[in-house]
Image 1: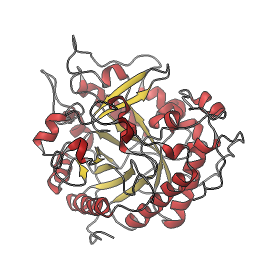
Image 2: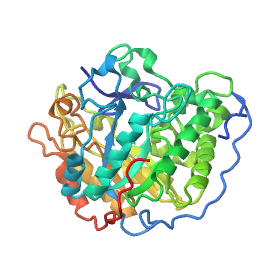
Image 3: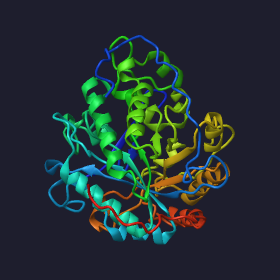
Image 4: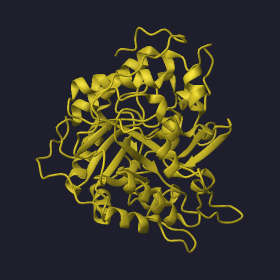
Length: 420
């Protein structure tokens, strides 16, 4: 059974695929033509885990999980709990032993997707255990909210609709429904209250890879489909505008948790080139979170191909130039996901190049994806497994360990708070 296949629209409008895992709004009127006001200025920097200059503090890896649907996944695949795959303390200890000091938990459905929107007690208990386990292993945590009110996990896997899962499991009404947007904000506030004060928490990402480009509306009430920053700004309806929604949610989170870093990604699945559309940070202690999977022909190189593709970046088409174009100095920037298919060539060089850029710019970084010790699950979902190489190529882990060796800070020994 295929597990996680992700899609993304490229700037030419074609479907691309990515393997592996993968209240303030209630008064809005859909398809409004009114302009989004500039976001309020906020004092940049100031948080010890997110410096604006010098060496980064946080270097680690991403785990990505999905809510179990028994009809799709069975009852036991991926660990037998309400979300999959299951991560245990030994998995986090392995990441810490390799040198990482951060785990980004791309976490699903803390609140239910459909109304009545409320916290899912089983999922919240899993989150509490994972936070305890990460803390015990000596890892900082960014909690990244992947799905919830009006947004199912299957928005990341649209190209599998009608194949390994039924198409009606795709839910993206958060981009068109004011009540769902308000509930998403409620979930973020709830998450902030759950984690604030925990010594291992490095921040809350209020939405993983916002995708109004797919599910949102333009100003004529039709699906948006805007895949350049200029087109997004010119066409997006206020109802579907992530800039407005992110600012609303960030202000609510800041009121609930004054000291919690708030991570905000740009539209188009967190693409770096969309970061300028976000404007200035809406609150203090914002961290801009970008994801980078370019060059895509390399990062998503399939296992069954006629030959191997070698890593290469040239001229203006490099990660360093993409970051240089969008860096404004108003808030720290975090490379919250990057990764490459283990079936490509020179994967270690790809990771080394990304790490070098982050180190030179003082950016924290997290590689996609840290594996579990569940052999059956990992056999079904190995494309981005950083611990495995392919053919005669070294695994990404070799390059990651070199970067992680620079880590000098870990969470303190404060008492674990457990579930709330």
